[in-house]
Image 1: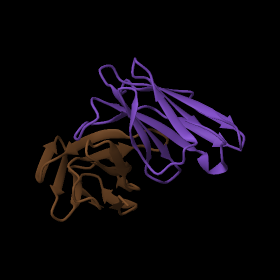
Image 2 (image 1 turned 30 degrees about the vertical axis):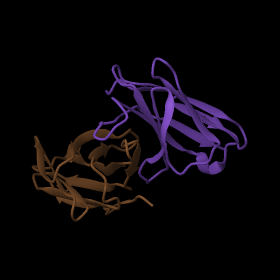
Image 3 (image 1 turned 120 degrees about the vertical axis):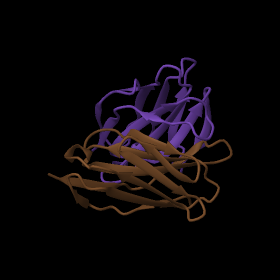
Image 4 (image 1 turned 45 degrees about the horizontal axis):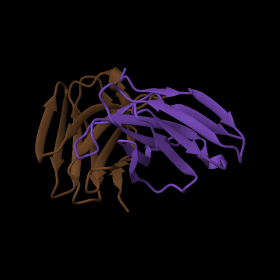
Length: 112
Length: 114
């Protein structure tokens, strides 16, 4: 059974702080990992993909991947109230990456 | 906006009926994946279509079936609807069917089964 585990939250941080979201996954052979943001009543939107161990930065977002620990995280610097949403972690698996598994999501609340 | 469109936006059906949901992929994308998202849960992968063939499938029964057309648009068909099929149905498009291809979601179809 391929699984992604995330803390469901809610995770509350004050405006301007760093929000740290974590995810563990079950498939050691997975190569591709994704973070999505989903506002209430909307569809998920892609924030970042990461494929190699280490950090990947894009603006205020940094994704971190550790394949040995089967762990991926997302840091949001200078959190804004507009970042309040559910954050979904996902990975691909299969010979051609044709299958996807999403976690249940972590609800983030950034307090003004 | 991702360029992925879905229709209809909302749909109400009764148990036992059949439903067809539609998705148009983003320009340049040849792969469509379908997901079911129940309230408060993450999206559950139903299947993926790549070049008009089912390329991968999640843990869904055969009454969930699909098609992809030569223009890469896709349909999701659900037969013998059950109350638990009430959910947001999402399609996502991407380029190619391999590892590392980012998926972009459409706005979803909200299905209610009474």
